Image 1: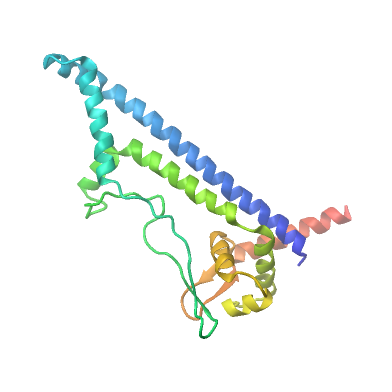
Image 2 (image 1 turned 45 degrees about the horizontal axis):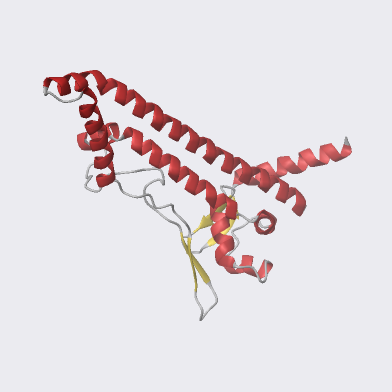
Length: 230
């Protein structure tokens, strides 16, 4: 398959991923602000009346509640760890080993002391901290989207061409042999970001193109052929 065709196809996919993460971040940020305003208005009247009953300024109680929610979230917040493929190179053999990250989704946030993720405490946590949760998710989406800026389309396209040419799993060392002089640690981490590439961390380790990616490349090749004939 023509390498330039793979590069154009991959560039479109990477661009789409970056845009989708930006849209997700913007939607989460707007949702966070909207929820904050809604909650502020929802508690404004009852808390203001309670403040007046206690001889305080009507906005003192509202401000206190909002500051308490923000402070409470900062206390229970668990920072997001954006996942990344772990790549190890053994100096004695020159072989590579990969370990795919496991655990919660990168947008999932939980409090420090949460035990039952479907219990009442979890529900109260998610409702009470809905606005800051969304803002945290927006920041996480931006951080994850920036990962796609590190993708070297030309280099990854060469790797995809190697995978496309093989109908079986390609071992990590085979890929390195096809791309001499390449920083394999950086390349594997870039390929892990692409949903077109499946990295198998269970023995025997290796890489392969997903069936969907093969079909998409075939469609792109057909479209290019039709365009050239037309």
